[in-house]
Image (cartoon, rainbow, N blue to C red; front, side, top):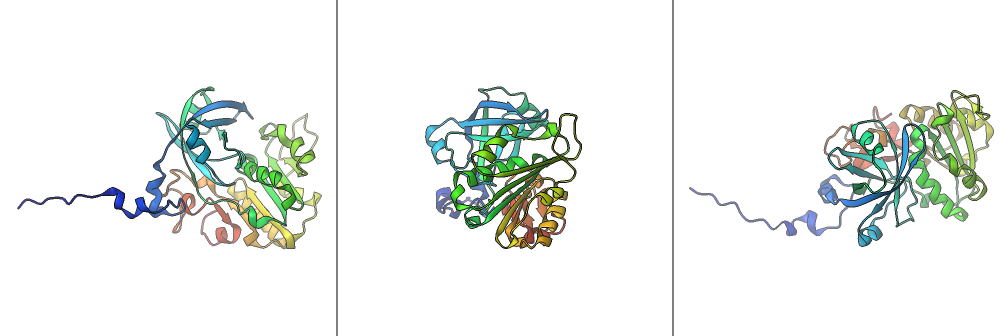
Length: 302
C-alpha cells in the first residue's frame, strides 16, 4: 500500500508564529539569521588581541540589531568556521559593533589575517545579560582579569552613558604582564570624563611598569567597599572567580548581587553541541551571565 506523506505548512508551526526568545532552546532554530557585515577598522591591542569594528551592510538590519551588555554573537569567517564572541561596544550604538578577538585557533587566526573591507557573517545576539537597570542607585564594582576586560567594556559604556544613575564605579583590572593590558588608550577617559576609578595590577612587572605588582585581590586593599549597596561584575579566567567572589562574599556583598560570565565554555552558542553543558544547564542558552549563587550550585561550572 502506498503511503502519502502529509503536506506541512511550515509557516503554521508554533516556532514560526511566536516571537523568538533567544534564551530558550526550543526556538533556537530561529537564530539562523545571518547579518552580512564588513570590517571597517582594526586596532592591534596586544600581540594576541585585535579589536575589530564591524558594520552591518544592510541599513534596515543595522538599525534593528540591538544587544545588551554581556550578550554575545557568533562571528563567521566564511570558509573557516565561526566563534562565539562577547560584544565589547556600546549597546546604544547602532552604527557599528566592536569585537575583541584573541588569536587562539584556526578561525581566529584567519580573522587576524583579515583586512579592512573583509566580509563576515554575524548571528545573534544571544544569551543573558548583566542586569544594569537593577544596579541603578548602587555602587558598581567591575573586576576583570586578562581578556575579561573585553566583555566588561560594554557595561563600562553603559554606566558611563547613564552615569547619574550610579554611585561610585570602580574597575579593577589585572594581567600577567603590562603588555597584555587591553584598551589602555581609554583609561584616562574612563577616569577623568566618566568618573570611574580604575585600579590596575600585573603579576610580573617590566622595567617600564610603575604600578602595582601582585594578584588582583590585592587591589581591594586600595579601596573601601560599601557592601550593603554594591553590585559586582567579575570576568576573567574561571579560577579567578573563586578567589574574587569569595573575597567579596566575605566583605558582605550578597552572592545574588555578584555576576559572572562563563563565555569561555561556549562553542556553538546555540545549545546544539552540548560542549558547554554543566549538569542540565547550557552555558550558551541559559547564560553566559549568571549570578554567583547560581554558579556555586552548578557543579564544575568553575
